[in-house]
Amino acid sequence: MPSPVVCLLFGWIGYLFSCCFMTTVAASTGGAAGFGLSLIQTAVLYNVFQYDFFSDNYFDQTYFHQTRTNRTTPTNWTYDVQSNYFIGWVLWILAFCGLLLFLKSLITFGRAKNEERRLQAQDQ
Figure 1: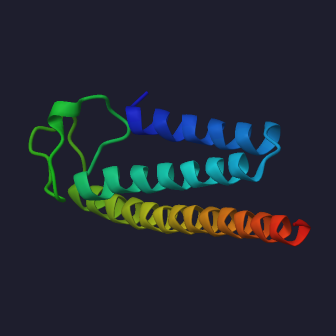
Figure 2 (figure 1 turned 120 degrees about the vertical axis):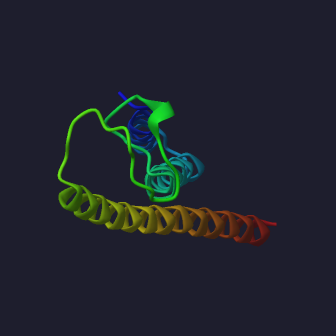
């Protein structure tokens, strides 16, 4: 299994673990922020570097949307470009959702921290 997919899988497992088993706000928001960053990383690896998620051949990768010249199986170039274009947009949308998840978790943690400080100031 390629490493970005494994990274995304472990990010998802960490997010589920932190949300299900941890009781603090810091743990749950940290898990959400980490999963959001994992989504962003996966989208950037694919879209910017044209990382092929379905093969482990790291030395056959080309950069910045160039087509590969040494394919092992003949493919229909038009279908390949259209599917890469669609997958690219889907991954950019996932990256945007990851960014929103990351920012939401930072804002939630900041609000919880400010509320805790306000309550401590009232008690004194």
